[in-house]
Image (cartoon, rainbow, N blue to C red):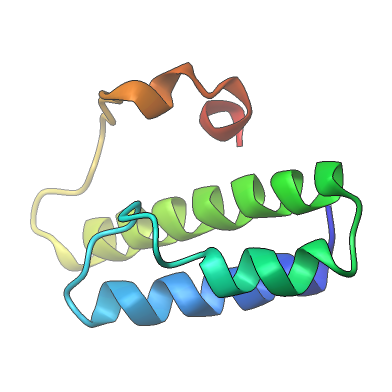
Length: 90
């Protein structure tokens, strides 16, 4: 995992989320992957991507929970990404 890569991905994803777009559309990481795959081993690119996506998801949940009268107490995972053990653990 590379901290600079994670930070850059988080900034891009958070910017996208503030624009009203959901995460996971597939196009949000293309330029990031191209840039970082030239600098890092594929294993580190993948791990950085997982950590970045997980960080953004947790940040947005915490932000929503802090602004809500009904804080998040339970998180239900659904869809194909729940099979990504690294993402779920992150």
